[in-house]
Length: 595
Image 1 (cartoon, helix red, strand yellow):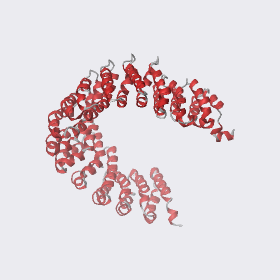
Image 2 (cartoon, helix red, strand yellow; image 1 turned 135 degrees about the horizontal axis):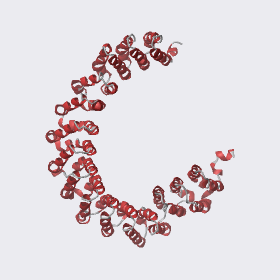
Image 3 (cartoon, helix red, strand yellow; image 1 turned 45 degrees about the horizontal axis):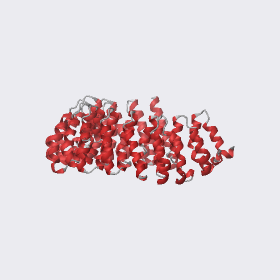
Image 4 (cartoon, one colour; image 1 turned 90 degrees about the vertical axis):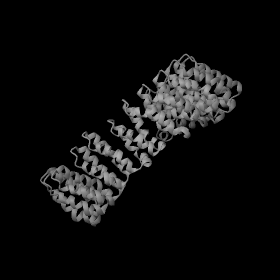
């Protein structure tokens, strides 16, 4: 057997049959995953005559095994002898396309769509199209839903009589008794419309679209909205008003929020598909209604599209439409009761400043940004702060700092520590957007104040923030502005603040580099090794271990080692432990320099 283990090609079909009948699902799954190897070993002839019939007959298994099988068969064309024999794969895939588990059916349909491309037009009519018909007229809804995904792949390459049959089958499925089938048909309506001739789009598809869009089930109606985008792009502009718009207007006011949500979600695509004239007359009022919808989910989906919708408006009267129709709705959403709506709006509202220009931004948008900066929901604040740069480009840093900065400072000193924490996390982002001079002038003192906050999480975040700022502004900036202030805290009477100095040094040593660390930071750490508080002393040991790799070997030997030796005989157990640990970690670098 040793030989057989190493060589899958000796795997006989008998063993496969045994394994596929084994009680252990994992074994059956593994053998299905090896199918291509088995087929190679058997050769194309035996794969067609023995393997495929065996697989077709034994399809009743756990879903995961069937799923693996459906996937494998999609890549089997060459293993059965190439495109002229590809139709041999249809029987097992047809069975898989009718099983109860949706995931398996979908995978079988995916594989069928894949191999349909490999059929010649003749084979498509002789083998593939009859399969689609059988599925479309099957007794079980499972086979009929699978058929919906197969019409569009065979339609373009068959004769006109067969095309007529396919259209008829699709029509029938669109009015099937089972909602699941109508849902499948609605989800494929747009795709099918794309392969149809324009006359049939007008004569067949529009009536199906209208029927599905007023189906009693909202899950069907919302899929028709998706198809609307594809259909609208296919039709000439003149026909849109009569054929598509009545249905779309109806969908935008549907009694089910899910359908209205779908309209809001697809709004930018619909806008592009119907063009500027209809957008102006129809979509603007519809969009206003969606922004005022009674369901929060719909308002949030529409709020998400505000910037895109405004960008795509016709330029000649874009500003007027936004100012008179869209902005009043946006103002209401800023104080919406639902935080998801406010958050969705905050993620795009800054983009309006580039569209509306400087004066409008200062007069109309800045008050809204301010309100959102002070919102109690952290996501809203984050979305505003993360997008400040585009407003900065429009109105300039001075104006921005006069209006928004006081709000940021107020949050930075908020009584709730989580609010302070959130602002710290945005600081590197803000600093990057506002530049170094502005930062030094307005925000530096804030960043230093956080280092002595009474909440540890804030001090920790502030340390991390300093490191990110140095990464942004460089070591020279650090040496002039940050390092002196940090080192000044080493003499603070509060031992927690002295420890913060050590934490800052740990974070800054690497970004500041060897020179600053050796000349400025190391002496402070050494001095603190005599601190009265044991917690400070063992943090000195930890700091020396952390900054050791940045220092050169001479400094390590002459300055660091003596201090660690002294600490390793400290009366406090923890100080001893960390000093010895630091010695052993750093000692790895000593012998190498002294051989």
